[in-house]
Image (cartoon, rainbow, N blue to C red):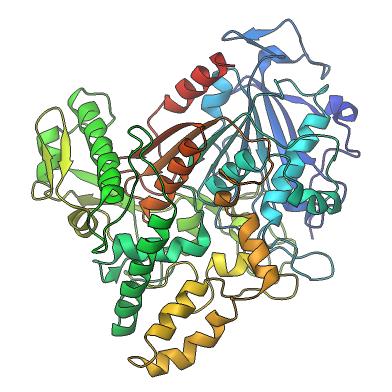
Amino acid sequence: MFEIPITNKTMELSDCKDAWYFDEKYRVWCLEDILYTDKATTPKFQRLSIFVPEAYMDENGEINSEGEMNGYTAATAPVIFENNSAGYMQMPHAWLDGPRCFAHPYLAQGYVYVTCGNRGHESRDASGKFCGKAPINLVDLKTCIRFIRHNRASVPGDMTKIISVGWSAGGAMSTLLAVTGDNENFIPYLEKNGAFMDESDAVYASQIYCPIVDLEHADLAYEWLFGADKENEPSPAGPAGVMNSFQEALSAVLSKAYIGYFNGLELKHPETGEKLVIGEDGRSGSGLEYLMEKLNESATIYLTKLQNGELSEKYSVEDYLSGNYTYEVLAPMGKKDDEADLMQGHAGPGVALNKPSMGDVAFVDKPMEPLTLGDMVSRPPKGVDAHPFVPPMMEVYGKDKKAWLSWDGNRAVISDIDSYVLNHRRRMKPCTSFDVLGMDSGENKVFGNVDIPMRHFNSYIASAIDQLKDQFPEEYEKYYEGYAKASGNEELARQIYLINPFSYIGTEERCTQAEYYRICVGACDADTSFTVSMTLACLLAGAGKNVDYQLVWDQPHSEADYPGEVIAWIEEIIKKA
């Protein structure tokens, strides 16, 4: 079994001055493989690395107070805190040129970059007990922020300007870090995790990509958006499939329940103040109109950029609208053509994974256990060759969009949401999609406890199945009891509450919250409903926060963005300080 590289012997980075090294390619100082708690239960995934622009440090590991880069100094440079969370799983910190590393644009602008790993739903301690169930993922990240602040004298960067970044489950964590700063609910977890309790875990701002949040209502939201589509594609949620009659009926009940939930939030349009509601038919009302407004805006921005030659794509607007072009997608990598490589789906588009054979002790702590995504994206030990697997891509033809997407040279308009779903962004997940019937999703697993690997958590589904018991008695017997157990379980209710950002926005919870939020979601992201991020944006705006919310056309579940725009946003909010 290999030894996990840990650079620090103490929790004081002043003892690690001789461990900093210089990366010639990116012209940055690096301090890697730092354990951020002396009470680590899964050290491989409780480490961080710090990357610092050349100007801010000297060769002896001392901070250079005179150095400057793009107007920043070691005292004023923003600190980017990017978590590597995916699928609520255990994940390592990233490394330069490694998979899922997004450090380079930030470093090039003169920002300090911290990458952090965390425990997840499959993590186990030395005794074999689960130790990464909700809310531990978030607790680890809070512990890491407190560790960095404790060592402010040894790390360049303005620790009052920490900007959280993450996507997918990482987007959820980035959101939670921003809205739960110093919240007292987490004190016992932080104390147990060895956090510096005299430090703050609050952040200045949050960049949120494709957040997977509001899990207890996500199944409802998904069926409201994708209910017209009875087929799902292969994805990290499972193989391709077609709804049976029970799933169709269940989808309809959940969709209707979502309307009541959404309307009960009493959201308002961020610009006009109009109350957002969805009509009883599910396809009318100001709530749907606002979603269509954001989708139309997304298409307009894309087509304008395409028309002006601002994108890497070389085809014309007319070619795009008529489908006269090709583009690359991830090729199927399952046992059959209609199956996907599930780990690859969680890793992200184009991410190269290490895929050694089982028993390769260079990559896993317990050699006879299956590889996790965290193992596949972990940095191999020094002297050990990686086994990078670049996912195969295939070229596909575009589709004619003129039947549902119009363009007058200045503005794009989508005819209706169901046409968009059926013709452009098909359903990815089956019904149910988060608290799944087989009880084996990442979300089912994150709501387990030290002894229970997974459990149902959505009481709405129990109610829906109960409504259908006369029509589907076999399914009722098979599924109802399992879902019904979610009601009245205080431990489960606490877990759900702690990792839902909606619990802290505009409520009586006392937190040191960020003022600035940028929420970017791919307009081709079908991992959750668009209305989930839309609701997040509206709640934040309603609480008086500064929110930039956008759907990014044709981008999948990823760090969906246009080049340079996150940097421009950071520059803008730093100047407001």
